[in-house]
Length: 146
Image (cartoon, rainbow, N blue to C red; front, side, top):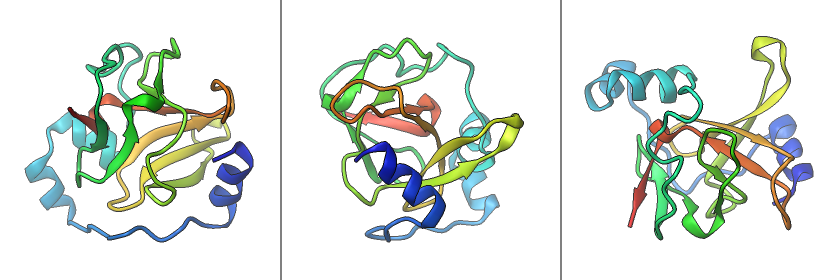
């Protein structure tokens, strides 16, 4: 995946997910902690360098905390020094949803789980080769499956 593809999807739509998970706000509140709910369902952000997964580089796959959809492989994780877990590529073409985000006076690309619409973080075009992408993901939105 390239930055051009990210922008195209953010502006013109994303591929369909393999499945869709929908729950009411009350149902999400029952299964998530207050912080997980704030981040994944209300588009919050954890403080830089505070997430439990920032310095974890064990082998495995990272899935959506809300619906368990596989999102990233640990082989695509890198030390970005940004303060959030960072990845260069999603595990599959249709697992991440991209939307233009103009909050806080900035223009960014938000990343969400394409299955359940959980807010994950943002993607930037300043990552390492070969993709040049940096998926900057909240630790509270994912979990590592070893």
